[in-house]
Amino acid sequence: MARKRQARRSHEHELLEEFLGALTLEGRSPHSVRAYRKDLEALLAALAGPLSEVRPRDLREHFRQQLTAGRSPSTINRAIAACRSFCRFLFEEGRLDTNPAQALRSIRLGPPLAPKHLTVDEVRKLLSLPDTAAPTGRRDFAILMLLYNTGLRVGELCALNRADVRLPAEGWGALQVVGKGRRLQRLPVNRPAADALLAYLADRDDSEPALFLNRSGGRFSVRGIALLVNRYLRAAGITDRSGPHLLRHTFATHALRVRPNLRAVQELLGHAWVTTTQRYTHLELEDLQAQVAELPANT
Image (tube, rainbow, N blue to C red; front, top):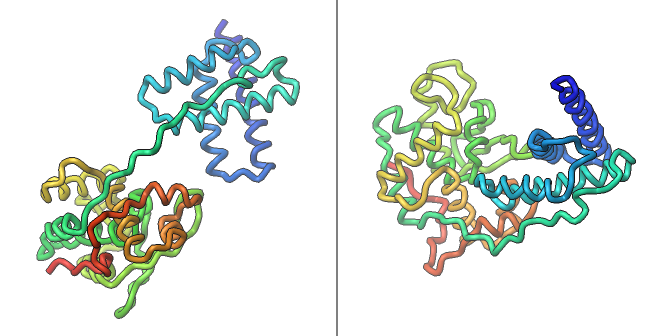
């Protein structure tokens, strides 16, 4: 019985590889192919029987369980799209007699909730907290400044190396970032953020390539940055919002208010679709300061 199950799994794996290969030939991005692989491997692992015996109710039950487990509707809809494409491919190639996903429908989504962001006064308070008289404080200040002034994803921040940073003595600096889909992007760094980085790097006397090092002398993890940011948010009295992504949302909102050019903000955030940028930006009724990205350095 175990041997039979193993043979079935092996056959299903071959079918999956054939499907993913077809997607690659169609020109799908490596990121999309990886996402399809992840979703479909989870689906195949959850199915009790062979693909030839799968019925629409089996697929509906799988995705219903995903929703119950707490996965977001948008993530489940991506998996449903992968399932539909996979089953259609197998049916059209004659590997399935019927297409069990033909009538499978996506979860209906309501209007997206506006992600929260920080006000200018909250940003000022947050940036005033690191003790820049100490090396650790200078490091923390540089991290907060970079997240707020560039809109970096936390994973992109953790992956930065010192070689990715260009900091001239005067004027703006620049970062070379590898974003989603392995897209190479060059981001501007304004003078306050560049000065914060220069002050932090002046403390470094090691040969580690990582831009930001934790207290153990290793590269920061995503979780480590999240803990650091949340600690300062709580110290600033901000308890209803959390996470490094909050600073990315704040950057997008403030940048668009200063320069109302959605496409420019989309490029800075590295979004593939402008609709994603729209969900990030929230114009406040109050008048934001004209140079919100030029918040003074912590002195």
